[in-house]
Image 1 (tube, rainbow, N blue to C red):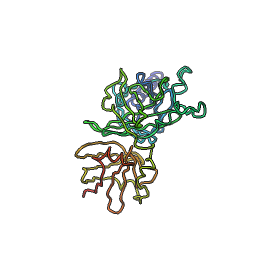
Image 2: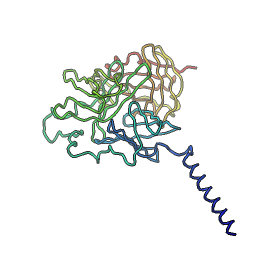
Image 3: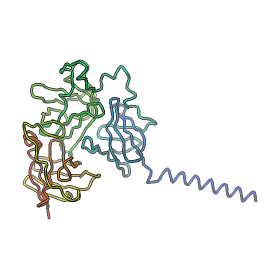
Image 4: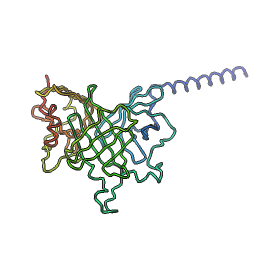
Length: 337
């Protein structure tokens, strides 16, 4: 009887060990769940079980949703209108030029900001001083050049930037939070970039910190094209009162026009993935349906408008300057086949 009990206990122990091993190796276990820190960039990524998360720093947080498959996670920020991928390799999470390691608790969150550093974060102090030269609202807006776009806006009490540029390897994006130079309100900084504002023409020069990574493709001058999510009234808005298709699936397909070819595929919820190839440029990424409804998609300084009558898609700038900056992409694309 004793021998049978010992055998039964041994069998149970073996089953427990096998169950533990299977759970550790199971393909359904989310390897990204939890907190990740990037010490070089002073930022954190937090992934929650419900498919949501946040990119945080001492000065605030940008919320996102995410999906994952294998060692790749796709992060989408509806607030910024951008999507990015991160890859897990040897317990390090790589996203663009940033690298994150798993930690028990995220270090770079607002509540961990030292009091001595608190003045570096963005605050709207318009009622405190009355001195317009010290306010940072003049930074807010959308900017562009021949290669891409730059957006500067406020979220959760902090200034953030989002850039997207076309390169030889495709479309590259970067985003993060900004801190003010204590001696010069016309200079903003983050771990890799320096943003310098020129009041003569409302342009911004993006340059690199001395210890920045390989980000040369983002540098240069970006020129103001309008407020975030719209255009200056002096230049006129694109017509957004358009008839919407029955569902977002109507957008999916291949299109062609005088400017080039456009492919739109399924993405996450109210977003679509796209690849746009023209004679003078190429870009790909994720577009988000605008507040105007399913008939309009917004992307930086562009409107992408669906025509329910013939199924064509028109790409147009939000302003005249935006049309000039994106001349190679502007036009009407008709469904193929």
